[in-house]
Length: 201
Image (tube, rainbow, N blue to C red; front, top):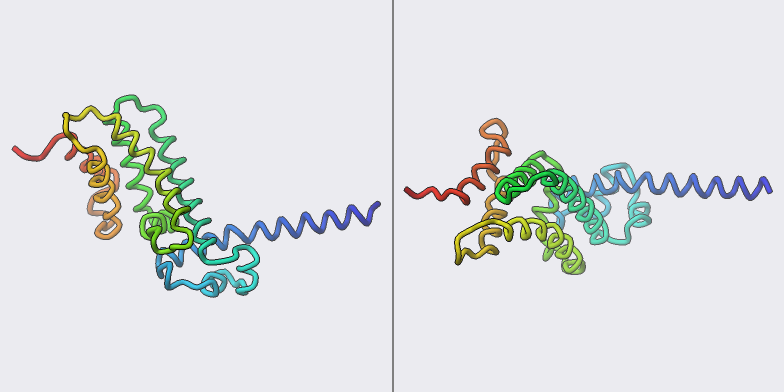
């Protein structure tokens, strides 16, 4: 009886240790995908980042594509949770969009590796899982689509182009943003302001 209990305890401990290695693996992958590039990063690189042998990496994830998908899923879940919490108490459509864009901008500019992977690694970079990656991105963008659909805008405005223009402008901040010049919140509010109140005289 005691022998079975000891065996079960060892199995549970082994499973726990195995699970404990998954998050460091994801963190290492996110870091390298964000800084070195997805295509340029190998499974060996990821293992070396945390002192893990390649065979051990493959024990947890069968391929680099599977690892990218896990990183993507964690990135999308994180930003969706943060954004939905931020807009939960907002009622005015423009205010709700502004808060959402502020949250999105702050997230992608806070040097978070996961956010950089989500924005920087487009689904077509991993054709084998392109459909899954696209579905994750679409699930997040569906929130922004809904927010823009709620806006009171003049007749004839193409809401899809409006969303793409706004997202393109915000996501490109990763390229040119320099900390200290202007805050992520100011950037987001300004962009939304330019949409709400056109800049022409």
